[in-house]
Image (cartoon, rainbow, N blue to C red; front, side):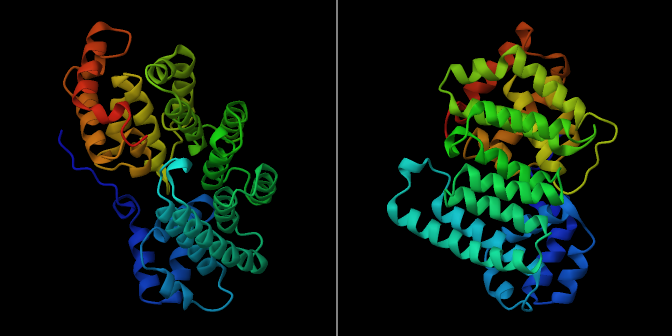
Amino acid sequence: MTWPVRFAPDDAYPQVGELRDAVRGRDWAAVATIVDRLAGADRTGLLIDVAATPGLAEPLGESPAGDPTAAALLGFHLVEAAWTVRTDLAAPLVGPRRFRAFHQGLKEAERVLIAGAGRRPDDPAIWTARLATARGLELGQDEAWRRYRRLAAIDPNHLPGQLHMLQQVLPKWGGTWTRAFEFARTAMRSQPPGGPNAVLIPVAHLERWLSLAPPHDQDYIESPAVRQEVAEAALWSVGHPDFARRHGWVGVVSAFAVVFSLQGDHRSAATAFRMLGPLANRPIFGYLGNQPATVVRRYRLLALSPGAGGLTWTNAKGRRAWHALRRALPLVAGAGR
């Protein structure tokens, strides 16, 4: 089956387009109606997706004074704009001018979010955004944990915030691998089976894979311990009968599709790709290079090809197919990393 690749959140979540149009039209009553349909992580996910739209700072700046939803939206928007200026390059490759603009944008976001938290201290979206500013401004582990504890007191299983906190506890932001995996495993087990929070497991392993040079990266992701833990996380979440396609589900399934593909487990990858259909999460597939649409098409083609369901890394045919893909897709080996 041939599918296009659809990264736009609107394709999975129609309310993203509805909310974006309402913000652009300064229809604050409609904004409240759309946002109030959702709660918890679903609401935060919606705000994050809409906030990524360029050019929303002006209409959001005209929102009614004291509107906490608008504050969260504007905060996320300013964070997104700041990170766009910084780029995804490693810190040594980011020039001083970009860093100054990056920090200036985050400080502006922080001012908006502090005011929003003062008006609505129990808004998990605001505390999630403040985890992003804490990391970018390098406020340290103690301050990040303080903010996360405020979030967890409101919603202990708030996945958008947990994804930000996972980044904070990685070595590249002053944490450790031990702390990162401890955080991911605890978050997964703190939610009943069928929840999406087990995605923290494949994301943590992707980060570890990304930190290693070839061939150690592939040795790591193919190791029996990693394969077993990712498979168990999939059964806990996307493979569980209670898994629901709520806001953010595309990113969850995409993470498992990426790791299973890296492991050469075509059978499991095919299950994930069938769940996704034409949908995919751009940042997740971006782990594999700067051409995520190409990555999706080629991994999906291999996983869903006739006979691929019997291919696993443990059989010779599966290994030959995987190495053929690696030769055809050199960007997997390092571009964009």
